[in-house]
Length: 247
Ligand code: MF3
Ligand code: CO
Image (cartoon, rainbow, N blue to C red; front, side, top):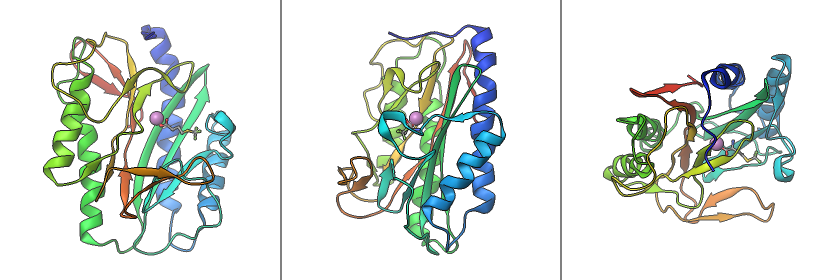
């Protein structure tokens, strides 16, 4: 069931979404080679709490940290720990904040120092995939048009679209209906209503789109060990387009 939000609810969602955006900007200004992923998580937790919000990921389904921090071949849901970030790495940071009774959710992939051109391009195209996904998105758009546009853009560069994780609705719960795949056929799926709030989050791999979950039961890695990137925002479907709440 899709919880369409009223104007009032969307106003309440602005604050957690703004905090998510600011936290990611803060992380972007601090993250560097030599830090551990655990140190990145500490920055995230401190910033979210100092903003008067709660880190929604902490304890969600047993997840042990405030942010998912995924390095290189780690696609999503990396558990922060002792892994040291190195020059040339790419680091995806995905986080959620809860305030006013609502969640906000976004992710960025950060370039650490001197990243190989081929990998930098992957990160750029992943971000572009999000913007392709929201092109033409407005009230009445069929749901799977989003994934169709993401997939077309990613595959035009020869990249793999990760299938086993998707975007999602968001609101009082971090994950609400509908599921928003990053692949699909144009003109298919339910027609989205005005006031639907979605997290659109392309996860794009340099090589194979096939992933494996590690023994920690969370960290998803590419099966070929090649890097993957992640980019996510929370958006509201409006009559004439979308509003991005986490930008
Ligand atoms: N922010 C993630 C998402 O996009 C949620 C991560 S799962 C968690 O859906 F357990 F870490 F919270
Ligand atoms: Co999400």
